[in-house]
Image (tube, rainbow, N blue to C red; front, side, top):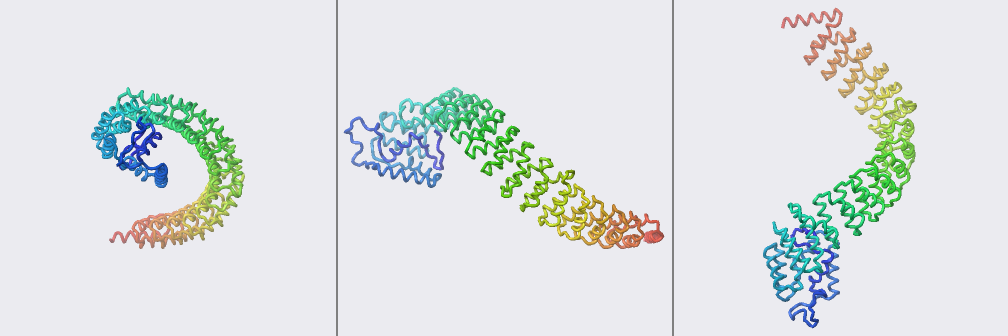
Length: 593
């Protein structure tokens, strides 16, 4: 049995068979087989307190259990202290006094002194009712000492040899297995047989400890033993431990046994652990068992874990079963997981069911959202009307946004005009700017000329600069002359420098006479030198004589030297007497200076 660790560093509790003897000892009650042969022998002296009655004992045990139930972690440690450190001391013979002295030294972690006390009791009182207790704690004290593992092992063996029916026997067998594991880890392979043989013992404690030891040793030779345990062991705790170890080993050779366990096992924990194994060991042989489990199993946890594995297996054979869960199961978590599994498969058979799900008014929001993700990847023209319907009828912005993502591939579809109309409707009436921005991106890709009036209106009235900027990008692609006045207005009046610069680029490319006043206004009044430089380049390209005077002004008085120099360069490009005269004047002034 593994040592129970507490902050008090007390000794371990007994196994299930050792609990009642310890309670008897705690309350001063002897076992029937501990009574002297002479029934007339007086069990207690005049000075020894009488043991509690059965009613008192039941009351004390009930109180202890209640405390453990209310607050198990700290009170369990206190209970250990009560049982092993603060046991009531009844006056008795020399053997009892030696036993109490050994316990005191044990609790003080004076291992060598405690060993001496327990050994003295064994030697001087071989037939004492405390002899098996003393032998157990003697072995325990050796175990606590560094380098005494083999001696502790031997002392536990002595307990089993001398006291085979002791209530400590189960604990001793478990300790032997644990110590054998430690000794194997130290390179003493001869102790391995104790671990292997423990799997055949009657003691449940020994079998569990043997399984733990095999897992700790990471020895794949244990896999056949674990598989055998799955098929033959009756104790569910031991089968569960075997299944957990097979999962840790990720042993593909155990697959048939694991699948058989899923078919026949009634214990939920074991079946769940078998499913965890299948998550680690992917095998197409599991598919049929998983599909049958999904169809017949009633437990939601097991079905959910099955869906996770089917998602990982990504087999098209699972599509009908997944669609059945997605459409008809009462548990929304299972339906959602089925959708995730379908998402991995990209199977066209799912499209009609997904469309039907989105058409249900009162359907679960998360299911609708995941269905939209799936349809986004479907690239199926059938879904466009459904997505448009979502935009019209749904109020949730997340659903509408996902529908817009699905419409991004609708450029060349037969429903493209309906898509454009829906997008323009969003631009006009939708309050959510994320939706409006996404609609602009789709319109930009579709290059829909009919969107120009709405975009021009946005340049004049939209408050969000990101939306206005995106509208400018679309108008640049459309190259629609109807936008020039709006672009000039942006260049002259918009507070956002990025928008003014983008409008300037568009106007520069047009080179139309009607853009010249806006360019001159920018050169004269814009606070950004970069925009003034860009305006000079645009005016030079127009070769419009209206630009000469503003360029001369900029060459004379612009606060930025680079702007002044660039204005002179632009004047050289004009075949005009006024421009030439201005250049001569600049040269004379430079010569004089």
